Image 1: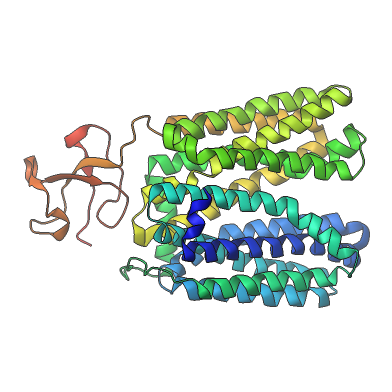
Image 2 (image 1 turned 90 degrees about the vertical axis):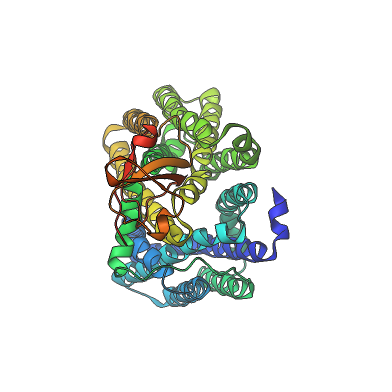
Length: 460
């Protein structure tokens, strides 16, 4: 898996991702302390609202950013967002009003919503071979998991020597280093994008791509399954550790660390497993494992606390991490397979936005249910949601899902460049087969009935 680091451009981009993630992790800790300084006992409410603003920024800004990524040089866009994030981080220590925190959090996360999909869309150009790209996806998953373990430890170490305000300086350094690494990477020229339609039309295309492509509709359902299982980990761990098991604060980090370890182990194994089994055979069973684990969490949280049940909770969190990684890591392969090269920024932006919309649903659900009905009920409800999502993904994703499809064009005129390899069919239609994606010549998915399928087309 580490062989992809021999590619200089990818090595610089991956390092940029890692240092930016560390900076973001430091900002998370510092933001908690800043909220406590400003709001005191209401700090949790401030942080909850800030997280909601983060998700709203991701959902609203990512599609527009994806449209801009198809029109602007990607390197300039990524550098601009890194510089924006650095400036916001340097401003945060000086705020003294809650509304100022909310405004700066929105700006910070809006810049992240522009950076991440653009970064994701660039990697397939840098690593065109499927095996290398699969390894890169696993490396990215590992980076996220290691950051969740490393950043809190680094923040704790720094706080022994400096005040929390300096953590924001560390955040800014991370973003500036990321910008420098992106500048130093020699990126291949992306496929030109035809300038048809405005930014809003380009932003809407990513959503239409997901709606029209069966495997991408399944991917969205799988994202919901992961969000249902992950929400109970990220929202309710502190309560189950402190209130149910009566363990010290350090045990919260241990429980969250178990999730990270499970995710990392899965990411390490996935390149070889995906090469043997394929995406569908890995992602769907992993999605069905999530509600099964939540059923175990229901029993664990309903039973009297004890050593055995604490070990069972750590195992359950590790399994949620492994299952989530097995679903999320191959998602980039599905998107790459389902979009033309020029449309990758819009496709990744749509996935970024839609997947975070799932979290925007499950985060408050996990919090409100746990507070009002208890953790066992929360695990049951979120488990049923994960099971429903996994079942929907199975129904939406055809078991036979070839990349190339035979189809008919009824609206393109004879001699159109797209019909160069087509032959005449009945009714004045033209028939051919190729790697099928939704684009300006193919607006809907053909039914799997062989040569009789039709793809509604335009002259473009």
